[in-house]
Length: 416
Ligand code: LLP
View 1 (cartoon, rainbow, N blue to C red):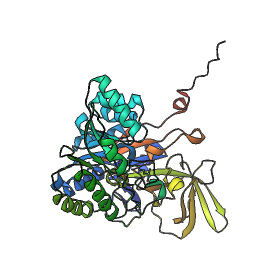
View 2 (cartoon, rainbow, N blue to C red):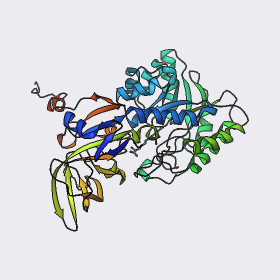
View 3 (cartoon, protein in one colour):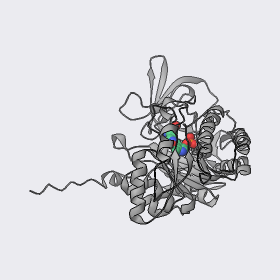
View 4 (spheres, rainbow, N blue to C red):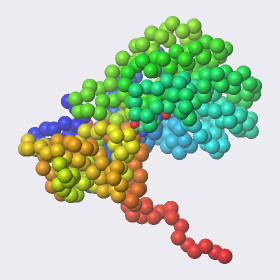
């Protein structure tokens, strides 16, 4: 059974009716299935088990501490891209040896934080960063393990905003420059491998396999101590309701075959984000108004691009279902948020029943890059989050209040 499915006319998350959650906690409300999360993690681990990788969940997809604890409990490490994310995984009980730190613009204080934490690998994305890290490591008397993030100049067939591996992109270092950098002396660094991540929601294996070739070609020219290959994340999920779960085996098998033919064994790191958590999450919203707008209806709900940015930013499709199944006539309907922006739509031209103020909707496959990209725009407090685990559920982040909106502002008069 799907994680979000109807039973006798009511939409459930596993064994919990969503109406019960929206009544108790209000909307907008993010709801996650612990069951689905554990299943995804376990399918991923099984698919790649022959390669014995360090699997580092990409925290940017969703950094709720209760969810991070599930990843820790299931034996995963973490991929972080900021000091804040490093702080969050430490709070969730992550072991430093399971954490890798990437990111294009690490500050000195983030580099210090990373070196100090003793995490597994720092993935360096520029010559400037390498120099700064070498100096900081020297000052702290540490010798961190470093990967060079290669830019393999490959553009997968995905939205242009989430391609990271083409030559013009800000991410990574070209193989030529990386060879120059590695030939310098870095007395305080242990350079031990390469990292590639060419984008997100990559539809098939081909671009990853092409990037893998470039990484292996680079490693072939490095000394044997360069024994680590971080292949990043990017595994796709289906956003339409009839999509099958991602077949991780389709990615794992050709990668394993290729690595088996490499001249030496490599330690593999993988950084899946979306593919582990997207389909474990749904977003509950309440209709505030309905109107006839030209050739269609528009329903306005209580969370828009402030709550789920993906449709506005990437034209992303998220399936939208009424919480109460209605087998009546369907109408061509746009679903819009409350924010004062014309891009503030969660779905266009959907077939939905006649909805009224007070009805609830669920926006599906919103576990990844949903809450983590939400904002306070138009001074909307951030939503609450609930975790469903079988036949029980609990609040895992409280809804913000107006006090949270005011909390950091300083309103005292300037002193002369
Ligand atoms: N590793 C690195 C270095 C990354 O930059 C990312 C994602 C990942 C791993 C995880 O990628 P995933 O497995 O989740 O595809 N906000 C966009 C996605 C941005 C992804 C950024 N980097 C979206 O909502 O589609």
